[in-house]
Image (cartoon, rainbow, N blue to C red):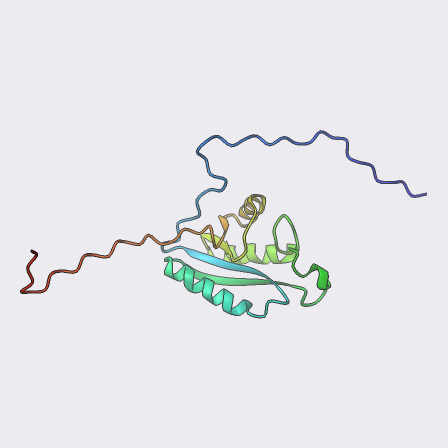
Length: 163
């Protein structure tokens, strides 16, 4: 008949501690003048996904990047059921396998230097997606902010004297 599933008896993998002074995630790619792809994963309940993608593209443009493509992964629009709508398609890539291949092909076609996700990525997702796309894959929150130069002091008007 049916055999019961048994617990895996292999020893638990131990994680090595990080050396002091190293961050958990590498710094994001330099966006100044870079071509990037923008990817968003949205539940069917999120009706404002186009507005969020537009706002993210505008934010990336303000950081000096040029958005050369956009990809949206929707969950719960067709198959899947309501209880799965907020879950990622894959814990490894966040996206479905077909959408991952689509992003990789678009990145190859456009020559984008990075793939920026609106959603937060885990360290594992970041590594897997970077390998799959052949370029850095980071979340929007990890993308570096523009360097803001301090505003120059206003020049004194003619006739004003410093006292």
